[in-house]
Each structure stands twice: as C-alpha cells, then as structure tokens.
Length: 399
Image (cartoon, rainbow, N blue to C red):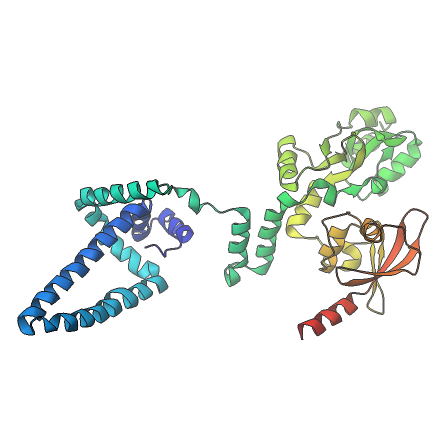
C-alpha cells in the first residue's frame, strides 16, 4: 500500500478503477492504515508464537521452546515478512488493490481500536514535536517535478521532455534574456518621408512595427502592417492616418520572469512589448514568439538561418558577432557558455578579462577556446570559437 505510486493511483482513481479508489481512500489517512495493518500483523505474530510455545511445551517440554523459537523466527521472517513484502514492493498494484477490498471493511469493524492506538501513538509523537500527517508532503516542487520528467524515460519522448523542462525554466529566465536589443529594433520613424515609411511597410519581415518620432524613446505605439497596407489600398495613407491605427505601447520591466510575462501577454491580449529599465528607458523588445521559442525551441534547425550572427567556417570554427546573445548561441549550437552574467558574447568576454582586448587575443571560457578577431574602441566586434578543440579535450578527460 505504501509503495503505490501516488500520482498513478490518482490517475487510475479518476478513471474509475475500483481498486484504486479503495486504496486512495485508505491512503488518505496513512496513520490509520498503518495502525490497522500493524495491529493485525502483531496480533497474528504473537498468536502464532503463543500457539507454537504451547505445542513445544506439550511435545518437547521446556527444551522445545528454544527450538520452536528459532524455527518460528525463520518461518515468519521468510514467509510472513521478507518474501511477501518484497513481492508487494515489486508489484504494489497487484497486491494493494485486492488487499484494499479486505482492509477497507476491516478498518470499519475495528475502527475504535485502531483510533485508540493511533491516538496514543500520535500523542507520544506530539511530545517529540512530530505533527500528524498532512497531504502537503505529496506536493511536488519545481525541482522535484524536473526530476520526475527526467526520469520518465521512454514514457515521454525526448522532444516533449525538453519542452516540459523549458516550461519549468521560464521562471528562471527574464525578458531581458530574450529581448531584441534596442539597437536592433526595426520601426517606423514618422520624421521620415512617406515613401521611406511605405518602403519599410512593404518590405518588412515583421507584422507589428513600433512607431516613433526620431528616436525610439519617443515611441507612439505599435502598428500592424496589415492595417497600414489597408490604408494604402484605400489610398488613405498618411502619417496622421497611421497614427490613428497605432495601438498604444505596452511596457514591461526588464526583470520580469518569462512565465509571468506569458500570462501578462495573455491577460493584456498583446503579442509584443517594450522592455524598460528602472529609469524607464527602453532597452529592447520582447515578443510572444520569443517566449514560445524558449519552450519549443527555434522554429528552424539550420544554424545559419536560426541565428544569423553565427557563421560556420570550413575549418570547423565559428565566427560570431560580439553582440550575439549567449542564450541564443547556446540554444542554436547546443553549447554551455555561462548565462549567469552578461547577456551578450561581447559582455561575457569583457567581464572575464576586465578590459577590452585587442584583436588576436585568445581566452578560454567554460572550456571553450575563443579568439578575438575584430574589435572597436568600445566593444568586441567579431569572435572566433573552436568547439572542436573543446570536444577533443573533453573526450581525453573522460578517457
């Protein structure tokens, strides 16, 4: 009974399995179930000992008591303890469900005796600060749930396991980790001429575009490209008309966890938001699609397409833009670069070296050999990484 998988038991009980329903009722108060089982177990053992002692005295006299004690110990240990309990532990459902048919009525019949025994036992436990049973111990934390998913094995496909684990990781990742940085935001500047704005609308790869005056800090909101093109089709396009169909901007703090932001998008009926820092300055853009990619992975598996900032080379190395986000690199390449510090590759190297390196500098971070290919006055422009050297050294260490 105690070896039953509680979550499978609940599933079977919900499906109407009679044995599972009976077992669930008994396990609602395991102290009473244990009291009932041990009461019967000890009664039978003591009764067997008494009968065996009487038989030994009549047949062999006092000398037979030692013999029957040894013999009864072996018999009870093998046939009443080790063998049946091992069987029950290996096949709990096969034993527990039929047993619940007997234990349920038996508990009702001798309930006053079981209650009395439990009352005394619980009273003694309370003297030592032990509280009575509560169902809270059956609740799983996120880390425990992660272990359950990892140990599911073939019951859950690998792809589904990764998705479930990614959902659990959403609370550890913030919008700042996945946002489109400010310098990469594509939008409509209302200070441009009408033709420039029209060209952006007709050639943009995005369906929702920020609308601003001169600088992204003067943002007016988001416009859906489809609605803007409707204005063009109706020959009503103008900056004033564009402003009328612009939806007010939606702003979120940079430290917002992704699981919270996903719910916020759902509640606000939004798909895109500006990420702002503690001073209210816009730092980037977060989208619903970006959060979904954290769960299901990139919508393409081709490295060059999935991350245009990663450029494979013929010699097995990769040239990577310094502004590339570390999380995107890890996800696209399956690497394990540290993500607990700066968000970009450039920031990670500068923090590690505590200075802006010159071109030609080599460094090893998290085991990955890295070369600085190109720098500017204030940042690293291009980086070369040698993943094959990391794999070779890792294989040698394992051997």
